[in-house]
Length: 351
Image 1: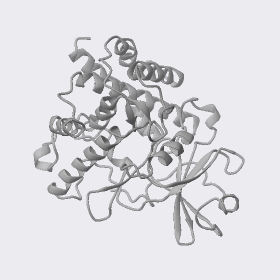
Image 2 (image 1 turned 90 degrees about the vertical axis):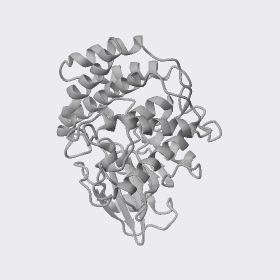
Image 3 (image 1 turned 180 degrees about the horizontal axis):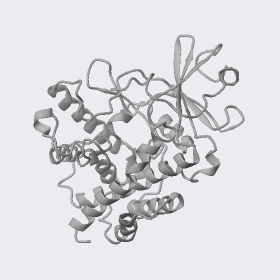
């Protein structure tokens, strides 16, 4: 488990507390006098900080420094701020957001402020600190929250223009292919193969929902005493899109070896008290009223490709010195492995 207030933080400079306090005074629910700032652990993309103003705590989420040098469609904290505001009271637990600042003169980059939500943040899906019973309850809770998200009326939430309904996979494959090429540092043959093959085998459209884009265990804050999600974090990749692609990303953990991105492959789910991938997907389908899911291997292959493109961006940012996490170089080393896993699934489908 990582304490959300003391985990490894950003390698970037902490914003100036005095200047930020002067700017935020009058813009938050409580008056801001003196302000303490400390990096929060986690994410590889947008640096996040804990703000302490008297007895009240907030979280500050910023774009990376030198963001103008990075990929143009990345680090969109404005979209995060919007979707978090729209989800207030929706049934999907999120922090309350308070202020968005796009004036980079304040702290050197755009940022927004939201409530800090205390709780537990786990990074290891084996959940060694929990009993088998509580592991099973937590996995079912994640399943419930994701199904709730995919069942929301995104038009009613004011998000009708948050993305383009239809052709999600085709647009995403094209987008991540461009992102990958823009941050490419060395040839990866399996990525080249996936970029060519994926557009030729896109399944029938599975509908449009609001999707998180990065729904995984360590982007969830849990209640201090029970396996209940109290906040879903890191909405940078949220859009309108394919619920099955969103689910498959979440389920990639069953395919990762224990030593790669904290996976579950090769372990005995029953001994851990957690469901198999098959049972987990079936429970999700039951919750949303969907029948058996076809083309599952394709959705997984797409997600390994997508993750490889994202990790390649982290690798590039590490070279530029703008990656938010101190272990970005190590994290970015998995491009070849992810691409190989994606291409293996493609070959299983007859590529």
